[in-house]
Image (cartoon, rainbow over all chains, first blue to last red; front, side, top):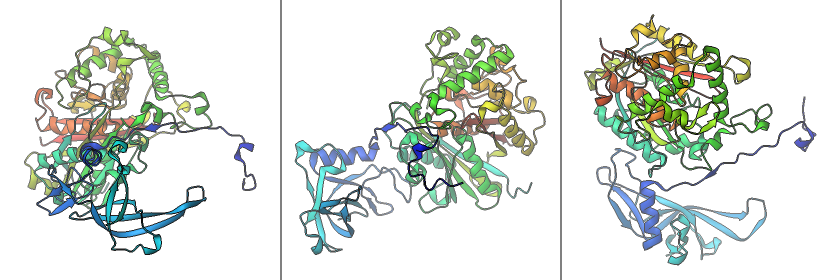
Length: 156
Length: 389
């Protein structure tokens, strides 16, 4: 038996439900260090495993490879290279965005990782994989200790 | 049954259990795994495969949370499996690990369980409100404590059990937990404290219930030949069993967990245990609520139906009794980060059977049984651990 022709399931015998959980996600040990440095100092912190020669960005409290606990946090440059990007023209409801949004994976200099972030102050048609960009921070008073304390990355 | 390899436990690790921990779920997993690796004198390179067990994703609030936890569990670029049977997961996860090793597929398997319940608001109980059938049950707006209360009341009525006897479980387990370094709610309390604590849902008082918690635990399994390379004192995972009943919990008598009996019989048969009360030297049954420990002791065939409360009152299940039960302190005392709490019980069996349980050590630990329970009062999971005799 198919209900395909019934567009509104509320015309059938039904119960309305919703899943009401809300969440407060705390940042964890490495996350706490990373986001405090963003907010307070406008700096990017990475962790370093000397044994495996890996610099983790964003920082982790353990090495993925040798599983040592990492406690060595170091400041790394605010610059990086666009490894890949995409341009989105529509919002979640299918409406056209006033400005196309550029999202990029940015490999942060002197690290083995990177951040996903928006790229601003550049015309989408002049974007290139390999472009050097730099983090543009919000004013300190407006920072909350979140990834969005970086307003966007822009050409360096 | 064609079991290719006998399976040993060679290492165990556990974090603190607390209402809210600073560490992320990945970081909690890391600490538990790191402790287990150190205790086995192994590195991540020695691990062939990883099994992760977690209860509902809705606690951490990350869908597919096992994938999120993967790197913290030491599983990067390794065969990785997520197993899940609700509250029964913690004792089901070593069974998942056992499949990998007993089948001969892998020499070693790391078993990790994590739960971080603190992100969930207004309370982790909220997540349980959507486990019900949306048509037959949810219109009444039930919560989990309801069904426990119904089950507890039925158990009390069938066997004519006074609440005072059930309350004794909280006194024992919270007392035992005073000696567990991870414990969240170790305490010296009395039966009156339990009876006088506020009634949550009759006949369940506040001190009948385990707390929500953050925490992680880990266990390392190895095949017999490989285990001997790492340790002179392997603990054997010689019996595994699990069984699930229908989610129609309205179609069975709640006074007895038949599905736990089925799981236990499967595990005992495999472990060649014919007379459980005689051959089992200690037990870690699942105790999210006081009466559940008693219910499960009966399901595990360690007490006759309706007689587990009597054993408790007579001190048989005390740490220095003839059949120590929850020497760890259980969920009531150590805490209940759901999947991690079940695996905590298996860690306890490992430490007890190696005589490494410190102040919690029970005398003459030869054979230990761990059990967890969950889903909609429908799953029993059982592991039987032994040491070399």
